[in-house]
View 1: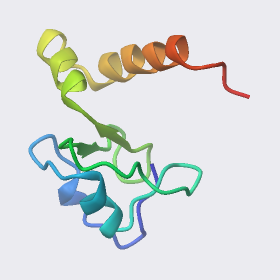
View 2 (view 1 turned 90 degrees about the horizontal axis):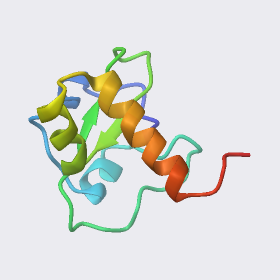
View 3 (view 1 turned 180 degrees about the vertical axis):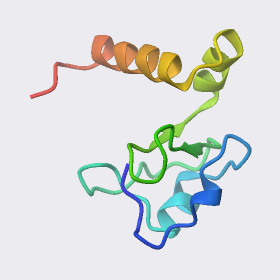
View 4 (view 1 turned 60 degrees about the vertical axis):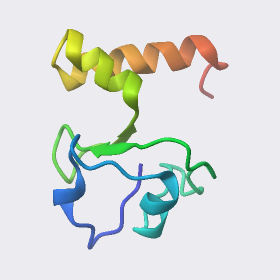
Length: 92
């Protein structure tokens, strides 16, 4: 996830939920600079587990479910990453 330099870090919270369009309008893009998905049927939150200078993630309800089981962002990120690698081809 990329955020603009002047981004308000207070918006990075599980309690702040926005659509992809709303996040896009705030200047967020995918890590490679491409646009976020063109869907507004989900409420997503931005997290910065390592602070504003670290990696940033948009998370969904399945991430929240993982946190209910184990309240560690690093656990939930690891499980989510593993799930994505099983679902999609290897990274190049």
